[in-house]
Amino acid sequence: MSNITSSSYPTVTDSQGGDLFTIVRNGQVMKMNRAALQAYIESLAPNTFLALTDAPGTFVGMAGKVPAVNIAEDALEFVDGEANYFVSLLDGAGVFSGNALESIRVNAGETAIEYYTPATTNLADMPATLAGSAEYLVRVNTLATGLEYVSVEDTIPFGWASYIDTQYPNSGAAFTVSATTDTVLPNNAGTVIDSQKPADISEFYDGGLITGRNGDGLDIMIYFKAVPTNASQYLDIWIDIGGSVGELYRQTFSFPKGVGVERGILYVLPSAYTLDTWQSNGGTVYVYSNFDMDIYGINFNFGRSHKAR
Image 1 (tube, rainbow, N blue to C red):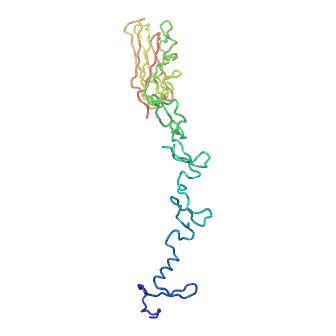
Image 2: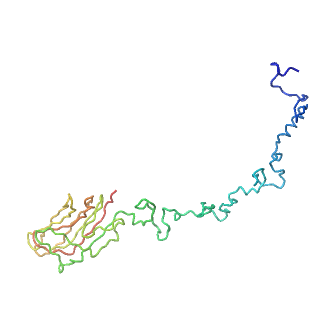
Image 3: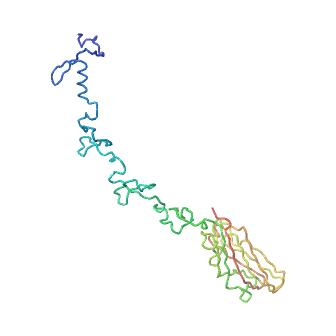
């Protein structure tokens, strides 16, 4: 046998069946053939799960069970397989039966999981109830803090309203326009028809002023009856929004039928618009005549033709 310190001694060899191996075991030198050495090595390194010293000793009676660390945390043991299922968790939501299409969430006590039915009414930024909102639409509220239900009508930006004066309804109770005087056309809005008014407009006409919204399109119709007192009489109508703009849309009407004959006056602005000055000050309707004149049956109609964007 060559000296193991010799450079010629092989470092890697294939053992043969009849080879003998010398090992030291418990302080003793032992010789073993290859088969005995293999058995000895296998006895030191188990090649089955049950051979492990900290594993269960048998599979018998353990069908369907799974290994788990025991309570002492020093070995493995077999436990029922369902212990690894969601429904078996102590803080779980329980069985699946009867909970089809349910979602899960942490309960209010923050102690376990529970099943619940997903619903918009459970969301903090949604209305708390669906009652009374049949066929309503959903939109972001004006504060941009959540969603709200609105009727289809409330989402339509267009609409109209009518304001009828009841203080000067006829020739027996007429309003007299004094000659050569700029005069506010009266309308106490004693009768209001506004069922078709856009939901975001509180009033088209309020406190004697035509209201405006910066960027809106506004259709205006003003109608009343007037009785001239002079053959050469005329009547001017306009709207004043104050500020640097002042007077707008002045129109002149004559009376071809002569003195004392009633004439319907129709002042129409089908494509007016309102900007910031009108929004700030409102619009006041004025009339002017070169002679005294009685007017009555005053009616203001307004319609939004465009919503500002």
